[in-house]
Image (cartoon, rainbow, N blue to C red; front, side, top):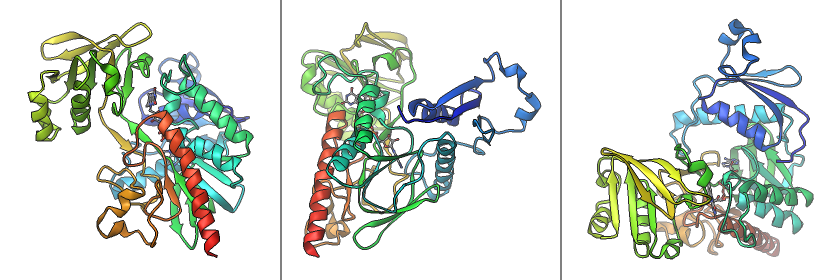
Length: 441
Ligand SMILES: Cc1cc2nc3c(=O)[nH]c(=O)nc-3n(C[C@H](O)[C@H](O)[C@H](O)COP(=O)(O)OP(=O)(O)OC[C@H]3O[C@@H](n4cnc5c(N)ncnc54)[C@H](O)[C@@H]3O)c2cc1C
C-alpha cells in the first residue's frame, strides 16, 4: 500500500510464530521497505552473533535508527472474544503492533483532538465510509490495526464485484479505494486500536492502545471477521475462483445442476449445504469430526441425513484444490485414503470470529459476538437497553451515534459489494444522526 514510509526495517527470526507473519504482513501491506532474515535459510544468518540472538525473543525487529523491538513473551494471539485473562495479552499484542507501526514510520498519532466521525477498520466497509465521509465534509479519522484493505485485500481475484467484467485483484481494489480516501484528505492511523471508549454527551471519548486520545462525535465500526484459513496445496491460488471462505449466502441458485463441496461441520456449514442442495446436483460435506452430529444441531443433521443430494464424508479433510484458472475438483483425504470430487465451488466454513475484541465492550451483540443494529436491538427484551425514544437507525448500534457496517454486523451478507454498500449507508446515517442533534439544539 502506498503509505510513504522512509524506514528500512529488518525482521530476524524463524518461520512459525504468529508474530513473524503479523510483522511481515504489516510491513509488506503498508509498503514499508523491509528485509526478512530467516535464520534457517538466509545466507546472511551465519554472520549474526548466535549467542546474542539466543538471549532474545524472536522475531527481533531492527529499525533504521538502530532501535530494536523483540517479540512478546509467550506470544499467542488470543481469539477475539477471549476471556479477561487473555484480554491482557490481546492488549499487549496490540501495543507491540502499535510500536512496530510507529517505529516503521507509519502514522499512529491523531492530528486533531476532535473528529466528526471515527471509522474503526479499513476493509471495504471502512474505506468506503471514509471516502463518503471525507467527501461530504466530515472531519474523518480511520483507525486500522493492520493495513488498509481488510480481508478483501487478501483475495487474489474478486470475480463478483460489479463493474469489473474480468474480475479485480483484492489488493488493487483496496489500494484504489485507499488512494481515493487519502486524496480526499482522510487521516489514517495504522497499527492502531482502541483501548477505551466512553460515550459522553453527544459523542465518545476515545483512547488508543498507544495512549493517544481524541473525541469523536460519531463512529462507524467496520472491523470485519477473521476466517480460519485452510492450509492445503492449491487453495490459496483458487480463492475467489470457485473457492470461497465464509457462507454461500444468496449464491445457491448459481449452482443449478453443479457439484459443490463444503468444508466444515458446524451449523453454518450444514445450513449452507441444505441451501445449496436445493439447486446443486450434489453437495459433499467434508467434516473432520467422526460424526456431523458432533458439531451440528440435531435437526439440521436429520434434514441432511434425509436429503438425497447431500453426501457427508466424516473424518475427512481437504487435501488439495485443483483447477486451471477456476476450481474444478478437490481431493479429499479420509479414512479410506484420497478421493477426487468434482466441484464447481467449494465453501470453506471452518470457523471465523467477528473482530470485536479491540472494540470497547459497550455494544450489544448476538450470541456469536456480531454487533446488533437497528431493528435487531429494539426486538430484544427491554428494547435492548436502547436509551432514546426514537428507534435506532438501520445500522445504528445499541449506543446512539455509533454505527456498524460490513461483515462484523449481525445479519450482514459477507461480500465486498455489501460491505461497500453498508459503508456508504453508514455515512448517510451519520448525517441523519448529526442533523437530528443539531436540529434538537
Ligand atoms: C480470502 C478471501 C477471499 C474473498 N473473496 C471474496 C470475493 O471474491 N467476493 C466477495 O464479494 N467477497 C469475498 N470475500 C469476503 C470479503 O472480503 C468480505 O466480505 C469483506 O472484505 C468484508 O469487508 P469489511 O470491511 O466488513 O471487513 P474486513 O475486510 O474484514 O476489514 C476489516 C478491517 O478492520 C480491521 N480491524 C479489525 N479489528 C480492528 C480493531 N480492533 N481496530 C482497528 N482495526 C481493526 C482489520 O485489520 C481489517 O482491515 C473474501 C474473503 C476472504 C478472506
